[in-house]
Image (cartoon, rainbow over all chains, first blue to last red; front, side, top):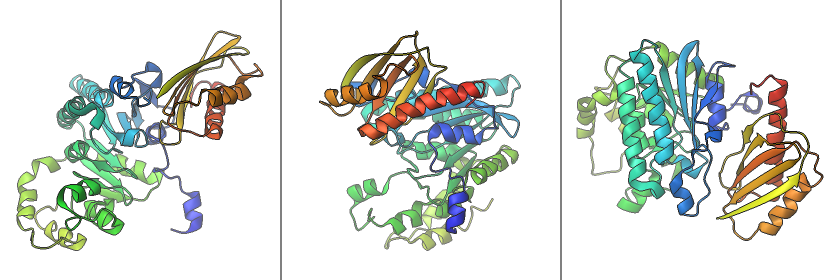
Length: 283
Length: 106
């Protein structure tokens, strides 16, 4: 990308969660639910002498996307690493459940989730995990009616229990800068040793877990430029495809067949993974 | 973590409510809501202990003249420098004015 294009483009990554939700929805339709003035703070962070945020790092916005009723759930990656606590997770689960109720009453409300999260908020432990379980169930319930589209733009990416939520989405859109994985690089290095994974090697990290690789290996559906219009039109395109005949998370047999071919005697390269995932996962 | 409260003389009620900033490293969140004319209340929650006099000096610079619209202001701070704090407060006031001028939409 030339310098001129860099200056002209409207970066999605540089936007905060609220601004991302506003940018995704049709102009003038954004309406925030359970917003900062509802003052739904995490009760647990203050007990641990940590500063709370009035929306607990989750923006719930109702509006229209390409004219269709849509709820956008945007996680703020800059607040506590986008970690999911009891309140933030409940906001997402509650909004998805309301969208489900809409569908059951004949209003085809669809949902987009902007993932910028390291996973569960460790300070809230089991309550955060329970919240993540709830929102995962809510994604599965809603996606029978309308697609649930996940987006991860970076730079936090999407990890931990929330990567499982990402895997449950009907479609997943990433940028090259975003990363998607169950365990973060430092966790893998800490638990399995630097020979298994060197968390200082950025090329290795993005090569294996970056948006381009995840799209090439069928774990994401689109890899777009860091441009607001590009992200938005990709999300609109996903919704237009409708509910997929088979969701990615229902294709465990196909993925397991790929994993059975892994040669664990040596460190897999990005190219090895692409070759492994090239067979049996084509849509 | 420390909680601080301040009160200042102010003008007419602010034109609306708005939020600026994020509780991220070196940044802060400012929630601004209209209050009854004449008085602005500032409640601060900060991750850095022992900077009460610095907060007082900074907020007096911003609100001391008593000219800004009356507001209830909540600050959730994660180690922002005084310059950043001042800009976020000014941003919040500016956004309430812009929003009022646009008939309530952001």
